[in-house]
Image (cartoon, rainbow, N blue to C red):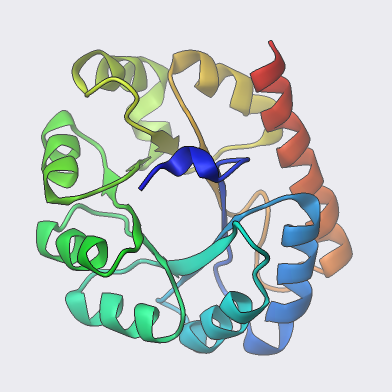
Length: 207
């Protein structure tokens, strides 16, 4: 799957999203330009939120699950309408099943060995996690050994102000969690934060 079709390549991580808040959150994010939404599975009601967001996603946008740790998670998210796998780890069996179902696969990696294992299993993008631990120097090292054009998406501690430095180190997209959304974030605040991230990303591409 060509990840360049998702522009901006920013994944909104909606940890703690409640089903009754999903529609308003989705409208705020899609309205600001986000095209990749992730609802982590380690909270109650995640699948219902994924189903609702998938139904309202505009053309060119997809919704998926985060913290997907098993093939059963892949099957459940796909059945709910999710078309993206995000995980904190690299599990070849999980990645391969999601890829076979046509899902965008962005598993978590923190070492070159994990990165190559993930790509070998069918990953389309690599979630560099935790980004704070890998750091800019680590990301640069990843880029020197991975196949040219491999999408590298740092996740963890990313803010609009730090995106430019990550892009300079080799980032081609981001997963954005607490700085964008946490349980109880109002649609108005979410919309403002989302726009700030989209604007910061576009600024990195204009340099």
